[in-house]
Image (cartoon, rainbow, N blue to C red; front, top):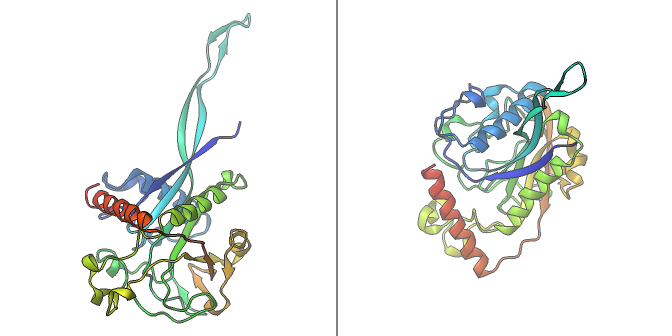
Length: 285
């Protein structure tokens, strides 16, 4: 019988003290278990399968990102059934059901560093492992170079770190992860919009309240070149002007999709309230 999957969500979290040189099982006790489970899957897929260095898998965006983890409830036999010489059962089979993390994806809110330059090469995820940014929050708001589907100004969120364990591929786990993340974004479109009160206009690079960055449905992925058709099935389009670059020896391309986002005042109030709760949980795990 195939394992029954279920999915868990983790908002922005306190990951201070996470040691990128150590495995998920060796991290401090305050690190959320859901994040450790996500990293367990990422280590198995990206580090062991694809050869990414362990210290490059955790980056400066993990703490401010939202993460989804899919689990499979797997029943394992701990003691087999035993019978005597006459065929009578002397010991019933004993088993235990455990939840195993089998897939993950993350959503990184805006702002982002500038787009990778065509032909460039990075030892890790393009522009995202800046150790100087790990304790200083998100990157600054910038005007980026314009590409096919991005004018260089419109705020976008970024999906990435999509990973499914090899033995569970082909079962719709990736689709479950992607649809969960995108549906959540559509239901919480104002959650990551910045506040003038908390950030100030200077830090956002604006001169009036009308210029406050707002997310209007644009999503980006930095996709490995060999899986572009996979993302295209979800509605993403290849951004030709972003070009191709290399991360950890693997060719990557940029892809975008514009989700239909409908906002009203009540939704904005609810999203802002949810954001305040998430920030409190991040500060006091």
